[in-house]
Image 1 (tube, rainbow, N blue to C red):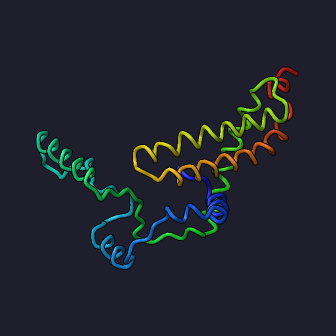
Image 2: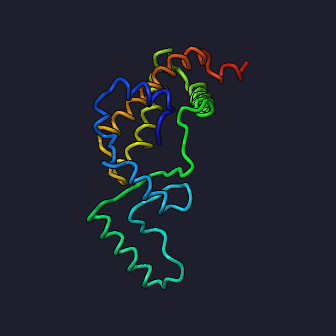
Image 3: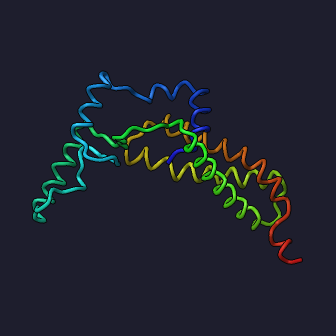
Length: 187
């Protein structure tokens, strides 16, 4: 649900407000030890987990399990996180290469959409790409605010990051896509 690391690093470096939403545990070593002790494998974890029943529960027991979990979720704490037991090198060169590849594929797909538009001048194409970035940001970010309780400022900063990135990409895409593909095909 996030833009590539370079964009996030740039945004977080400029927008100090997001630091208020990137919380730290009081005792990270104790929390890390507790996680290591209670997690068998890397993956996505939710607490309380109302979705994974212990083996052998009847339908009625599954319903009770879910109801107890929903009650516990309302009372708190609730946690939704990714755990990498083996550690994670967020600055590994491969991360940047993969991120670049993902962004290039996205740019190619949006360029293909721009080629199928008719009657847009350069700025119209930039606006089209920017609007596409906004739609992607809206649909990928706001569900996390709604369903998982992400702070609104955190969501808005991530949305702005995507929109700004696709505006800048739009400046390039509009140049590359000067001619509509339909004109090229007709000839």
